[in-house]
Image 1 (cartoon, one colour):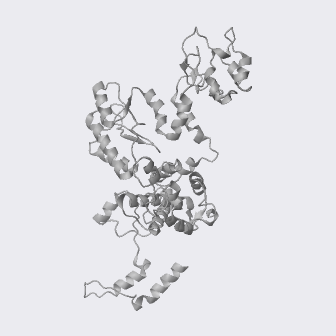
Image 2 (cartoon, one colour):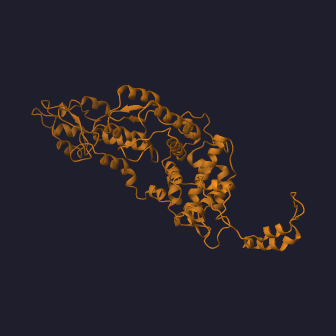
Length: 468
């Protein structure tokens, strides 16, 4: 997602992508990113539609992700001509919605899990009036119960024979005896609390049950969609989004937690590849846990760094249990580094290394992956928490302060974590001694098969310090 964001920003900076302004002098808005979703804003013209398609295609080819056409919609401003709407929808291959309310109702389908909750909230909640449009057993017309099929005492094959008319008496009121034959006793009182259908009244209508006035309000829909997450006794999402690390890592962890990571198993389901096996070991199907933890090449390295307190359960937990155990921990790694920073950084670099193997045909050794992860964790612990993106020496001024080489200056402007540290001569006695031994009369490169004798004592002292 970071790469997609950079592509959009570059297109905006080069005036290829024209962002949208909600007011004449308002700030331009080109995109909004969420954990699983994105919202794109652009001027309404054919060129902008093609630009969106090009950037999304480039992102898909480099990341392996693909935009779900079926779950994507386009909302136009009210003054957009109809023929232009049709042309843009044809280019994007997205469905068009006519109003923000329609967009909100369809928005829940963008999440697989939240879409399911949203459909349960909206679909089938009826304000029953004449009973002609309501399905007696499958629709929800008794709000406190839900579908009445869950409370039925009769076989499923006999449900089609039951209608509103069959449980009413000659006066058009509920027949308690008939209701007791069809439903369990705990359901009957709730049915009696609903006004019986009246064929002389108006038609049935869908209602929004989550507000007192039965009108749709976005806040109530969002709350109900989020309730399964908000009510967790140990909310994993808080542990993820409270990490003081680069934003790309919490986004990656959230996608992993939601089990949306695009492993070969998932890519095979989407027909993006025909091989679901791990690209590194080629032995097992590449699930999320396999690519991040259980691969035979990963286990041996995890065992070397995992805290002893976690070792017994580290390789047996589910995805969410595994993340919760390691991100919620306050255990220190090597006495001064929070384990949750080390764990999250290594996971991110493990996934990046896997993607290099899949898409570029090259990968680093796992020793290098661990080294990068621990380096990033050190950076977050030492620099990020102090509010400094790059730490500068505070005691001795750097000799590069006023004359920074051009090639090094370019590094500062890249999306890397760079910490330039000046080491005085006394801080590297071995290199200083070797430089003094150089033959000044010769400019040829010299090779040593063994350290010069003059370095013996110095190297022995360094080795003793490293051992301690």
